[in-house]
Length: 448
Image 1: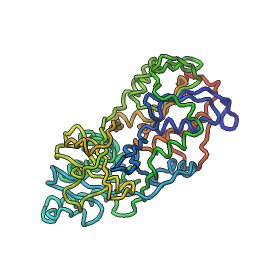
Image 2: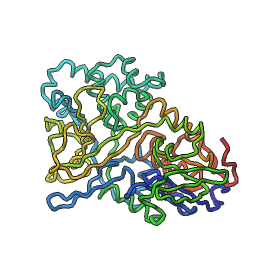
Image 3: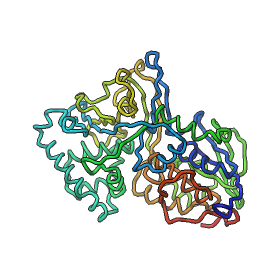
Image 4: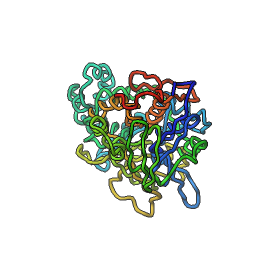
């Protein structure tokens, strides 16, 4: 493969059909012979739209990927425009309800902050607000000075209060990354604060306009895969992958083995390691650093999961017993607010409900896994990219950056470019590690 402009066709296996796998397949398909493996019956990964029969009315509802914004999702925005994917404005307000309504607040405006009127007379709530203002003012500068600190260590360094930690910052960050507070305490502070700054979460104004796909995220999946749908093998995941000097062999769940010039792992890090039958010491050492949090998403119509004070209702609603050792977070997405669904048909998606949702009020249940970011995971990210192309193997996935949809697509763009394929849209180049030149098919596949 001489590089861009002089591509020799290669036979490439792609494992996984989330945004990373489908994005890679879309970009490689015009110039290469691709085969996409998917263990499930459906494609799309976290792009999952369920059509609700709501008293005879059909309503498409997203239960995984829901929102994006143009500023922080440049590749996704450009891809949607290229594919003519319809979108409309969404809402991204946040609220927290602690101990079944003992403490509640929302972030939309003053009426939401003091939606629970007794917060006006709680001295510790006043201190929480003071700490929020102080954190917002000094977080960026301080995080750059102390890049090795975890979030808990960072909070302690700034001398921020217990209420700020337990009832503001950890709830908000847990909801964003779909991880329980006990995991968020170990999150690298600088990474988190850079993310918050980029998303204007450290200021009271200037937040980007969030958007959602009209008709649900499966709309973009359908458009994205039109040109290679016949190359996707569903119910046919990769069970075993081995690499040799001249390529890779993939054995699927049905026992069929096929050889390829290259293999692209668009799967979770731990799953990649399980499938990689001939992983060497370097691959095992790096990929074993990626962990995942299992979350159950319940699509339902039960409003009892929302804050007791309706003034506090928001697009994202965190619920907690106040115990930082809780093994799972619980957050409810108000889908009417997020997807513009009329309030006459109230719909919610709750991750890990605190109490069981009545079956009569439940439409759908789905299981997801979200990456857990700690110093081990973030340290492994550049190491994965340094292995790109080694042993004819390539890696992409949201876990290689911040864990979001944009990151998954950006990683696909990165791998496609290394394999000599450009995007048909224009967007800022995703930066992972120092730029590399597209590989040559004659290049030593075993080069470190």
